[in-house]
Length: 427
Ligand code: ASP
Ligand code: MG
Image 1 (cartoon, rainbow, N blue to C red):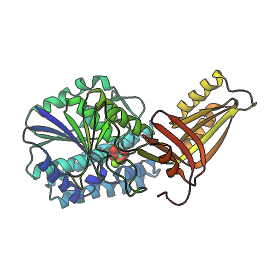
Image 2: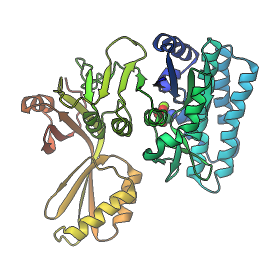
Image 3: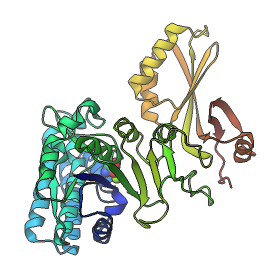
Image 4: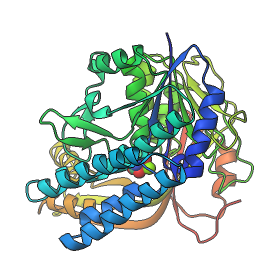
């Protein structure tokens, strides 16, 4: 059986028109000999709206906001001319999330978060499945929580990638029965205690990769509103081009340095299972696309530029001005781990230790607390991290012309510069 995975993000399911387009796209793309897992995110900005309900302290307000989200989904069902029975299923699936979240609130707010945000994916997949079925496709709906078993903290759950094939058995069995296409949720999973979990914001790409491994798929296609992976942000560079072939290891590096086209955890399980990943545009399905695969001898086509905004430099030194020795560094790394800071770049001198990270006041507050009295900190914000892979000195120079460079590092094919932010965009 030829099995493939397709993933659609929030923009590709934003309304009834977008859902219809998924139907058209799939009927063009899918071969009759293929079985397909379709992984879907929540519609448009639904996850943000659900987060807002979760952080609302007044119960009556939560109810009001909640009703408007259910209504929004029912309106899409209406636009798609779906049956009243389907609307009832949709409402029921959503209400279970709300009730679970309300129950969880006084025990664990993080568990409550996972329960309520899961409504977005459960609802969007209900609509997509019903539409595909109405459009005449052979299709089934799968609750991904029966396949994605998680552990670790709520909101940032972990998945044991080594036991995916086993976890995927029930889905494989479901797929070997009638339906040619199975529609399921990205982003969510289930803890061993039965509670709903999530994999971190924008986690649906990662879900698609996990599911591809779980069912033994031959490929994953992520449908975006951009033509694959570009060598630079097209908003900053009008001459950005699609990179057509990227080695798994290179894609890992790029997402590590902040390329935002796919979620950073997506590539590893696919690399391990030798599954190619396509990034394509749903606006131009036959247009330029990127294939991420094992390309061991690939010469990169063009240099890749990654601008990462809103960076902050944190300078750490001992309170008594003494040298930073190993004991201090053990403490510093422990505190960074405890505060959830993802270090993008670091630099050490005799008395100072500097790190670059995404700016977050909450994480900074946790870091100060975790470091305790023995250390002092200074923070410099409004910075940009520019990463260039496979560029040369000239490229770097042109890109950073006229900008103040605070830190520079070079390792192999990677050049990185920390720059002060300027108002105008580079050309
Ligand atoms: N709906 C979730 C989010 O917006 C997951 C995803 O879109 O990948 O973060
Ligand atoms: Mg989303």
